[in-house]
Image (cartoon, rainbow, N blue to C red):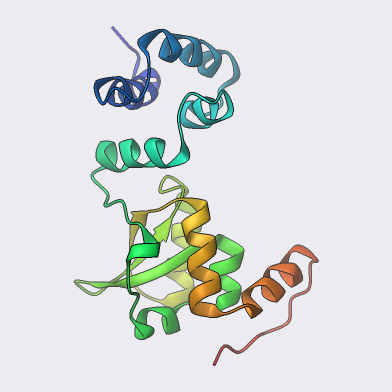
Amino acid sequence: MAKASESKPLELGRLLVARNELDPDDLERALREHFQTGERLGQILIRMGLATEESILRALAEQLSIPYVRLSETEIPRDAIQRVPAKIATHYHLMPVGKADGALRVAVSDPLDMHTLDDLRLIVGTEIEPVISTREEIDKAIKRYYGIGADTVEGMIDGGRTETIEVE
């Protein structure tokens, strides 16, 4: 019987095998590495070239009962974008996508990063409902909705500057 700490990666792996997106032998190899290193199973599978980020995130979305969103196919309302400044979206690598039942829906590539979700909840002053999307989709959406200036914001964050930036 699997220990509680073993059940989550095993469940993710079994989902991928059930979807014919991962060979059972490859899962075993990746699980051995997971238990040796403590690295997340999804990251190992991507690094080993055994699965794509999208297939991992779709399986994770199913496992956690969180919607998976392709931001390139989603029209994001302006009022949702205005709730999160470009600096915050870029720093935390997330994209607001709408509102639902008083909560702000936000696309993230790591829905298990509670620190980011808690920080955002404090910054925007409302409940956060995560949805899952790939890092690439989030990057493209930030550029599309916040503009090329989002690159400048990201550079300033990476450079350690802490200026306040107003987004029109």
